[in-house]
Length: 341
Picture 1 (cartoon, rainbow, N blue to C red):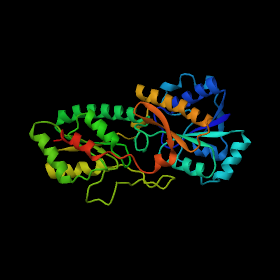
Picture 2: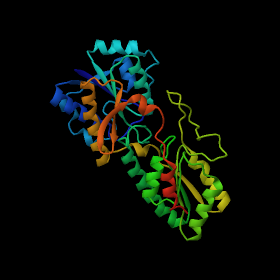
Picture 3: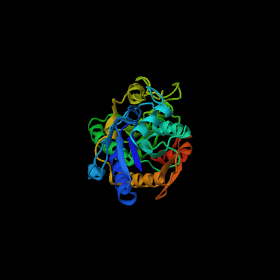
Picture 4: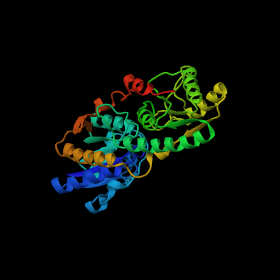
């Protein structure tokens, strides 16, 4: 078989490890050939591709980013759609697609699969927001980076007795905030799944100050106060029509300072969480996902996505994986909340 691979959506540590795992197993075990589509679905629509022989993927597991490039292109727009994409595949002798991406990418893959294209998905997102898999690669790396940032901000907070409000990514789920906040010893963790008032936040902050400490608050970008209409977004929409989130820390910090009298600073970690080399956990998981995706393609399990269940890699329907978000259970937040203040 001749298999096309694409990486779409936000970049993520571990993408290159997936590509390497798929190509090495596909070549050694099945004798498949591989090509990569440049710039995600954009490359599929436009037929922009590169050959992926074994020597091209050597040493890739430790490299961040993606050698294929990525974009947030909707494959049903700009001359796309299942019929046109199938023509591109036929013209280049491509039998199937391995689509590596997050919620938007896999929603598009599900729709194209329903329209008859031969696609297998691989879950990629630092947000860990996809149902049907216990973890997505990229999440562990993002948590590690956010935790290091919290550790560094704590020292400057203590030096000046300031309150630090640290904003992390996550979109509409709070997994990065929860894990990084617990690991970094945050005095409060604010996530989209749990409504928290500014009064409660300030009570935690004042409790920390009264103990002679400098408060550190970790907030997920999708968090919003009960008085707000929804998650803060001032950057417009992505090509899939979803709001680009960010900036809630800049709203909370002055509110905390006004109510408590504690000098407060906002820090948005942003895309640093996506960059650099993947953690060891993410390298292993991504490699296993790539190898499992090739098995699924070889066995014609179209419309499925590889997933982690416990320590086993299995395959599930893409429909199941994209039906709803993998939200943080309230019990997990309440577990962390015992340490607040």
